[in-house]
Image 1 (cartoon, rainbow, N blue to C red):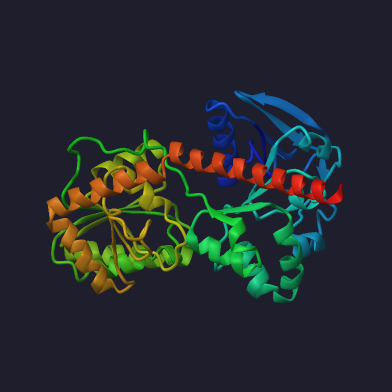
Image 2: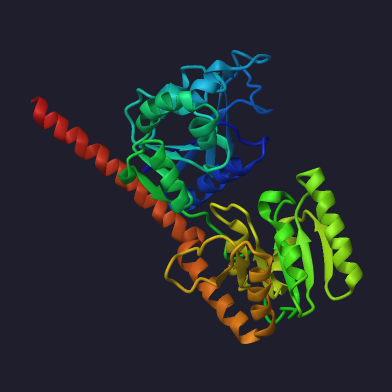
Length: 395
């Protein structure tokens, strides 16, 4: 099987979909599936170069496709209508014919899917960042609802299968008229060799928050919960400042809590992965007090390290012991669950053990790749069945 992973931008541009494309290409080649990457020739986002380049990136090739931005200094009507940022050289279509499956990454830009609409190949549209209160979904459902009819006509036709990270993503795509039988959940994967428990390093009173300092992440709810928490804790906050006004509010709350002398709160800023793993490994509890959440990577990373999580979101897998205690967004409720875990060491161990087991079973790279390859086989088989059926009826 030959798979082409198609992403609007790639290194040297760095982001979630760029990193995911690279990891998919590496991992697929490692298990014997030929995978390459196609992207627009850009060193800066939406500043394409009209020049074709191909280079070898370890196990796979990267095709950088010439493209141009027709409205570099104006509002782009193609983007507002069809989510098309740039126009590629049509020569890229010839390359698609060399692959069995075309795997589009990111619904944020649809330039490649739109311009390869008539290419008769099995296609997968991987919606990496779809969520209710922003981006692609918010734009068509609420910000520009008069364009919704246009989207609902063409979007369900650009791929054979649609992948999302969560069951909520599935509902959102269904609202955009994608048939439910064409939508599958492909979980975010965790490298369980990097994110793993480490001996008896846990500190009984260490509580951890990881995430950008933005109101939607609900850090203020966690800080308010400390006013109700009778057991002294050390709260470590890891993540970049995102909203200046909100960050000032958080700093004031931290100063007030530290002055009381019951709890210790530290703002540690952003960290690289190796440092972050050590904090996950030694924390007694990780708290995810989000106001809104579709999918918590932080919860998965914590559970992979055997650390239980108190969350205002949802269970990772329903009706399974998944290492999460679910709280309302009320600070008093949050403090009660937090206190339970801080006090009860055995409970923490059990929740951490269940969490690690569940991540290994459903969210490891091995598990996710197995599911992805099944999806590739599925779209190939369905396309073959349709072609065979069509030939029978036309002869």
